[in-house]
Length: 406
Image (tube, rainbow, N blue to C red; front, side):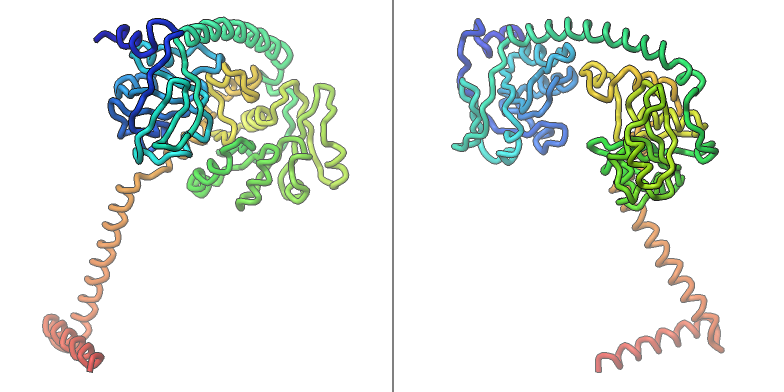
């Protein structure tokens, strides 16, 4: 049967044709799901993948599930993704917007699942969620709308980028306006920590890097409190002081306040009330993370590790808060010196199996060295020959053990 025939059979000759009830083993096929490797033809794949990628769709097409249920939407309209259309072309029924409770409501592979024609999802007799069947006309319409939206968004984005270049060329090219903080960062590795959703976990993952290289640390906003809480002392704090605890501000870190182009800085009154010295960083670039990165770059940091504020092309397409034209230009300026914390953490992650085997080898080597030392000490420590000294020592040890159990 061809893919087009399968698709027609699965979704009906037209979008008005109702879907039949679908049954199969529920498999959690999210990236960390237990059922990802167990998914077989005829199972029901449960995912949580807004804007499902082509690669993820290929994995599902190869597995040939009876249906795919998405906790979120298959596309948000931020960019034209081919994934939903690929799945529909393969004849796989799709259901979306089932909600976060979907994955939490079942144990992978424990019971047969059922999806009714109206999109309700059941685990045995238990109602898990209510999803919406995705029709092909809707998927095609979303794809076309996303194409148009993306072009419009990127045209506006590049106009804004040109405006940033026009107004901030002195800063981006020559570092004009970057406050002078001395040579504390020069030639050093610098860790910039921003208060993103995963910044605590990333800090834990960076502990070996921090221990080995002792980088200068810049805390951005509330992340400065996290650093102090986790036992690290920031060298510099950048951001609105209203976001930072007073005791953290009173520490040894230099405090940098983002300021308007005219020098007016939000939070200056709080700093003055606390009796803390601070420098201003005037710029039209509003992100304190971007200012922290520029600060490190202009003060000749050897390497800059960015934690808590990742940025990629998907963020630009989706128009997230951190994906401003200033953020992209800042990262382009830093170039090869900028590394994301996730990459550094990956370098310091040791394979558990290999690490355990190596530890056992070192332990065995230590035991052998200790035994060799004992043999030498005992063999050379008596008045008789080397061999006789060992025999006498062994006999004495045996008699001692016998005495313990009498």
